[in-house]
Length: 168
Image (cartoon, rainbow, N blue to C red; front, side):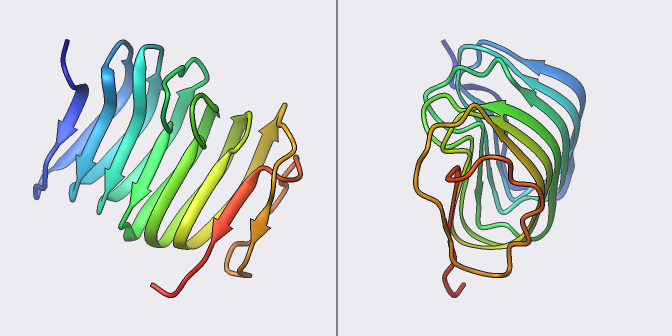
């Protein structure tokens, strides 16, 4: 039973996690809205339908291992991030949908990302920087990069990322 491992509602506090393993969360591993995150060292294991759903958060997420994730949704979904948020170091497998998705984000920063499978990343109406991405064992799919705002450094597999930029 249960509806997830960690649920964080809007708050002025900081959700800090270090070297935590989430396994058998049923639904969400982490659901956070309008809270500062300081996460360093997180394993998202099996039997969790969605890894992290983050909306309006600030802070950083570092050293995420979702290589055993087998859910039917995203490892990470970013929604309405307005700067002051970064992801550095994420290793994941594509299970049900794109490993990392997002909508209506500004100034996000993703670096040192390794994803096995495709689609790896799917963003709509999002701006920011993605650097050092490795996509492994990926099937051929369509790739749409529609803005120079995304400096992509070392994307190893063609056709694994879809980014649609709009005015936000």
